[in-house]
Image 1: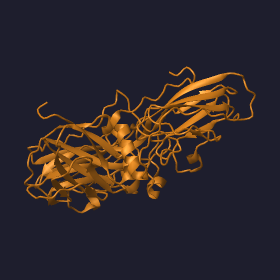
Image 2: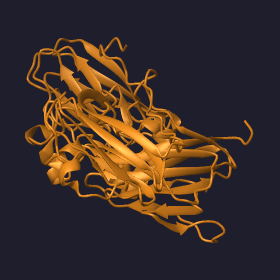
Image 3: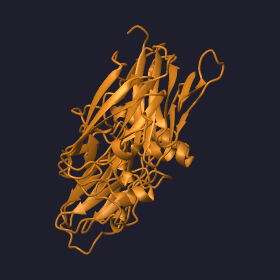
Image 4: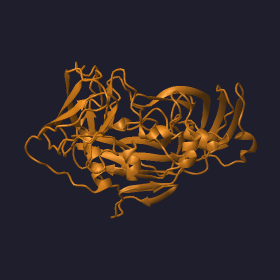
Length: 455
């Protein structure tokens, strides 16, 4: 804990999270990293707020790292003079600008600057002014004890939640990521599936909890698997407080009765036979479906192509969007209708595989099934540093060995799915993203951590 601020500094991000953010931001804003040498000179500033000075100075050390200021919130006694000692540990230059007009010069990696913020009598905002850095979340807030809280740009917008998603925040050592390993294909040709519609409050990003509508308490719902000709016996049990239903894209039958919404406490069972291969979406069938899908009621069914070969590793990634409502309440339908997501997720949690990477070894063949659950955004699945030699999309082989060509992206519309295969050439950390860069910046990214062959 910082004795000057009373706040525990935010833990710096790991190397990949910081590095990926820099790569994505550079692509997004087209700004190359620059360096300067030397230590920035201090700034002389006027007092902030009409408040008598106490004659005391509070000095706070602030570190720029991982495209964030640490700490990002500073509280000082009202009337104290605040001095900020800024140190840059990032790989690109940063500065610190306060809303009062005072600022540091740009500081290169390893450099530092001293900023005199003046006497603090009211809330004050700060940010990095280099292109795109403030928009990427590099902000800082200063408050004085006994003074009104700072206002935020989004406060005037009624569609904005009080919660904010930070795609680069660390979920902490106790966090367990959703297991992305694809389930094996069961030997049975009859699959009895029970899905329980439950409304649960769960964490969807570090420090952000949302009331989600779920199948079996999971977002996404459980991944199911079978083969062409298999029969699925689906039982929906509504344990929620409103009507819910389920629509399986993997089956072809009239939806009137079997996909109808049922009331709380009711159950519904129906059967379908899988006639076509692919990765298929299932979702709640209750209107407005936008609200039910956008608030977590979706999942994937894999129906293996008849000639699907074994691989060394196999993963499933379901991409979706997050539309935050008030704290602990369901997602905001107005945001969904306006297509204004707060986050983009793989397997129900923002950027979880940055912090708990998917694993492989060099030389292994890795298959990744991808489903875009939407409800609104396309997906463009890409692995940085890898090339796909196999691409299967919406029931069709589009590339497979010994074809000489390669693919760089699996592009999917909402509800579409497929898989890609690659062999990682050497050990290292290979980021994966949705190559719609705005969605990558919203949390649509993760990492493959590839070890040495045989280890």
